[in-house]
Length: 438
Image 1: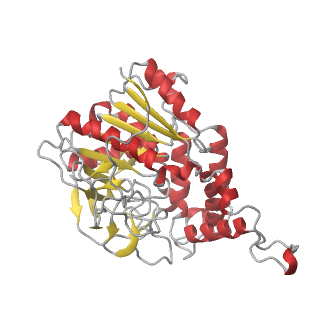
Image 2: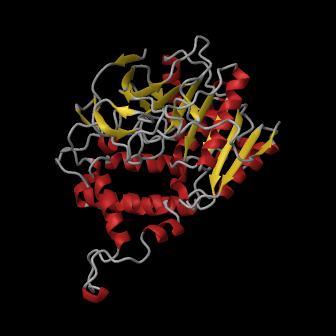
Image 3: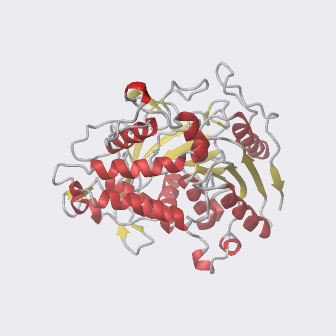
């Protein structure tokens, strides 16, 4: 039976790290007009064993959850937001424990925003195995009274879907109006549509893919090796040594961060500018920071290593690698998606080379082959993979228009303007998207 635990949120628990709210790595500005306001998580404990894809079983676990908006009497207006690698349940609003911590998708979720909390009940769940309040490698293993460390079970996207389904059960939600996510979150949305098709009416997949390419698996492996070969990793048991593999985790983040930005975006932000050029702009002829881009990457890596758990990084990147619903269908993606009954919205970004538009088009073709109602928009944006996190009126209008359509079909009220109006998205402002009904 699930039990809500009204406790203060644990830190992303690495040895020596202070207890703190899970920091949003994406939002560094005040909440946008129409914010859901101050929010605090709840913790739901589950004592029913969870059978994992690996064959292992997790006997009990806890998930950190935030909710926004009001669940209607029919429980038909619920939307699940699935997070990417280093995000959390803190999707929107201002953390009650830290006024500087703004939800990672605050520009997307809130009153009058594309996912309008005046109409929808929105749930953010910190995934099992993460380190922002849900049970994971840094949690205490009841069998040993010590942190799980590397002994924590390897997880898959499908395991997360099954765990999230228990959160839905906790709230009495039989079927989500929509399950939505970007990047790894989009894989989870797709996992919902395939694994539990009867429980999701609409699937919103943004800047994502049905399976990682060899190149992407390679990036993840290099990042993991950076962590594992750090002397402070201690085989994943660094908690007992009161240390953290900062160097490896920092390098892993630097590698990942490069893949989130486009070449044009990096050229515009940094170019070949020197950090502190010698007199007359000469090079310093050494191996310390020479260029602005080097300084930026080192800063991002060091910051990340101070709040994220290394074992969690290994676990989540491996879950990314394993996701491939077509694997059990001889590589046939249409066959893998044949069980999906949801309508789909897919969005890609022109300069995203981590999960390029062709990966979304591959999904669209497979869905259309099955006669699935599918809407697809490709946004010409310069910001690479991270574009899914940023404000873009064209992108937001596509999402807003799609959620308006869901609302009309369910008899939900019309969109209300966000406070001050700046972020409200007019339902008539959506650019053209390719839509092929079943």
